[in-house]
Amino acid sequence: MNRIDARFAALKENNEKALVAFVTAGDPLPYHTADVICALSEAGADIIELGVPFSDPLADGPTIQASSFRALQAGMTPPKVLEAVKEARARGIETPIILMGAWNPALQFGPKKFAHACVDSGVDGTIMTDLSPEEAGEWKKISDSAGLATVFLLAPTSTLARMALVGRMATGFVYCVSMTGITGTADADAASLPQLLNQIKERIPQTPVCVGFGIRTPEQVRAICALESTDGAVVGSSLVTLLHEHKDSPHLLESAKNYVAALKSATRR
Image (cartoon, rainbow, N blue to C red; front, side, top):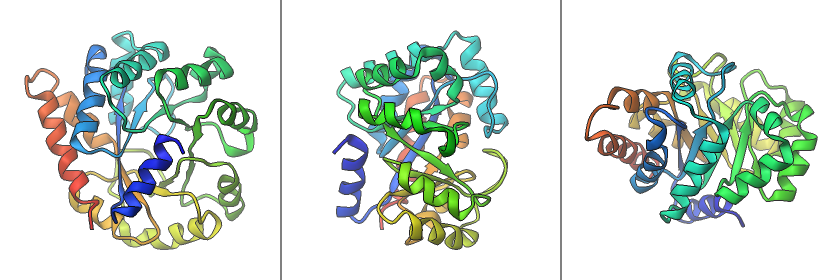
């Protein structure tokens, strides 16, 4: 059982849902990335998604696009992302960490080399946002061999066949996109999600499903986590915004921890 599976098992035992916190590696400052990881963990985040900056994002809205641009301008690279994870692990952080980003950086790195470098640094899984499950067979084999979870996205536009395929391939959890569109541009509507989530759960009964896109407040987290067919909520753009707005403050990490702690409290029944 890897860290992701262990965390979901513990949450289920405690009658809690997961808080998945997304931040962009290298933003607001590259040398703060390990500090931010540790702060999110200490605040109660159950899983940390670390965005790997890339010049041509797909589903990212303007907030995360801007954070990736800032990180790239500051010199953030995939090897430096892995170094930050390794540093956080050296400090004793055991929170599951997932890298989220485009396939191209991993392809340029070398898929096998990248997978083993991820595991060696302490990464538990990946979300390759532009690698469809139909095209991910080789990466899935490499990841399985290395012990790396493969998380896939499902959206309101996903077909039943795509859901079934993701069910056969996904490990760790399934990321349910709450709406069509890009991140950070609208609020998730919990009322519209049950049908989609039920369709997913019917085809993927054993793998946890977490909902993301448009979730910003504890109240929204609570509404998502109240749905029986979901196992957690993903918060990203609002956390990225907070970090950027407080980048020059001596209370940067404290502000992030307070926000994440409030979000996490909403996952407890």
